[in-house]
Image 1 (cartoon, rainbow, N blue to C red):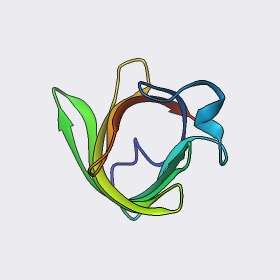
Image 2 (cartoon, rainbow, N blue to C red):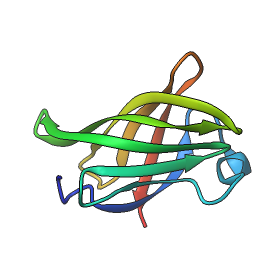
Image 3 (cartoon, rainbow, N blue to C red):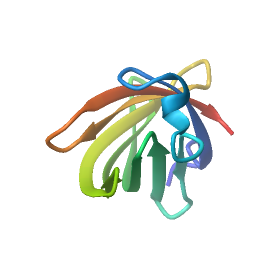
Length: 108
């Protein structure tokens, strides 16, 4: 586990979904647990993640697979995120056989 990711991040912007839709079922967020797992939620998508941590160009990187649901249908996929120099988490979440979207998150 890379402690730089640890805890909750508020998803404040997504490329595909926006506005009030992000918080449809609750606060849009991504959380990394101390055991290398975590979860996320945005719009009607909820996922449980299994993480691998490394670095890319000197910046902290997390890559993950996920399993969960999208509007009560089973869903899975993958994703990645990098902590940028401004402290924001930027990455992309992929839904298998469906959409993918860039996202930006802030601590908290």
